[in-house]
Length: 354
Image (cartoon, rainbow, N blue to C red; front, side, top):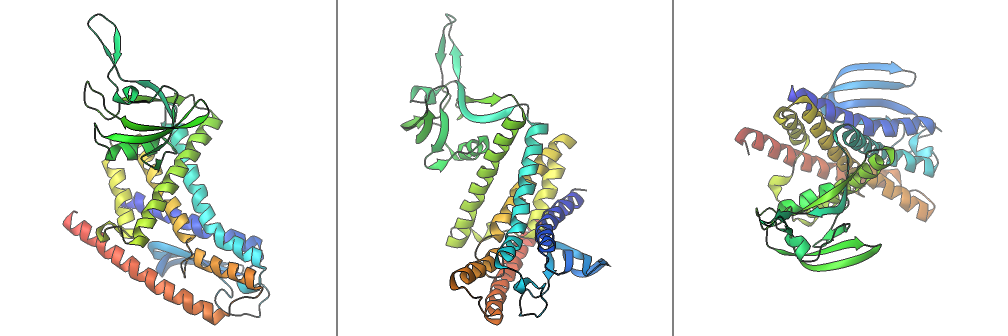
């Protein structure tokens, strides 16, 4: 069951991306030859008007094939004969739809599954009731400079956009360590040195509590937007590690790994409600990742094609289709090599249980 859910989620992410290209191409008057969900052998195909709609066997991608994408074409409705601004919108539309899907998933998650709208503002600190009934603080962060109503901006240089950032950061902290914390206090940015996060009574790193606002449309949108920024930031850091060689090869994952993660998330949840919440979280993370990755200026990706549009904008004339085609072909070879390597990693992990 988990695998079926995973394939549906992954298929939705791909379909939404390709639909962005498709609908913008149609609205721009560009001729769409085929809209396909999946890759490989055809399972179903139906032609409506000038466009074929296909469902293919391998749920690892999809495509929106337009007339004259990679060659000069006399058809006035071909992609290359469309106005430059229309082509740029079509290229960006896939990633934008991924971002919309991710944001919608976060809105549903916050509005349905959160009791309140969590913030990054300190509400209280850990306390101890003494024998004489007086109250003293067991919170080291309070003792080392943090105050109630401080809003976290960054911890040790890592920006804090949402409560999820705090979870990520605190997963790597050790009790008793000193940290540089930047907060917003009384409307001003304040830097606090040597802040220690530790509850001296139980040793926990979480020695403070944050506010939760009452949910309404505005607070739900605000929290969802903050979490969107968190995910984008984390994905950006991961991509930086990938391209600078700082990411371990065993951490690289492909479509098989993505399906496996979604499947495990669904199956390991304690109940249906938790499963839906976890799947929405994973789906939002993956679809934002797909959107950002596709906008990178890498040949073969939407971002690579967009780069050639920008070059055309500056040069006032397009790059020769055959020259651009060679560049995209080289990019696709590299991308498929990376996908094969990632898939190999995924299969090894599945077989070895790693």
